Length: 126
Length: 152
Image (cartoon, rainbow over the protein chains, first blue to last red):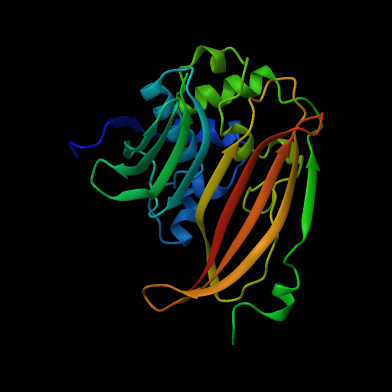
């Protein structure tokens, strides 16, 4: 969408998911075990939804710079994302005050499926 | 029969406290940054944690994995005939987290509400609040988490 000011793109491959599972000490088989996935009628590992919080934080700091401080971040999960898919973090400024902005955010796949929405953040600026 | 039984309702207000067995560590911070593709030098050098790390990790819990591989906090609610999906998170970040911080996570079962999905299925919305503090009992972050048990 042309009105979005933030566009951050990331392809999430299985090695990224393995790394994230290790980094968060969360080894749930939903994220890698094909036998289990077939049992629940899925054909690919599911991306851990929590990682979208981390991606949004990265996107925000890339947008506003490393001295920006995120004081609040909220997100609601809409749809699953699967290994190999590419996601975009999108955002626009909703409220702008001296030293502070509030952002409207969302995450969607490049095929147009909404993964996270609504999402929002409050950022303190230097 | 309601999803929100009296037995479940009676659990509202429960708390669980987890104290990390060691400081967060530079390596853990760097690993999280690498895993998420974070290029901030302060994160990659392990000097300060990315803001969501302590809310997303199970590192502090020091729990064995369950049969599904999950090694984090859970209330282990019994809601027959449902499947569990993530609802969302609302994070509040109070102060930077460093590698020397020893995390305590205090989880509270804040609320359970029964609703109906747009497709007419009943669901139980479970809200938990986790407060993360450091070794000096300073609040680092607060995480309001929603999990949803949706009727199959």
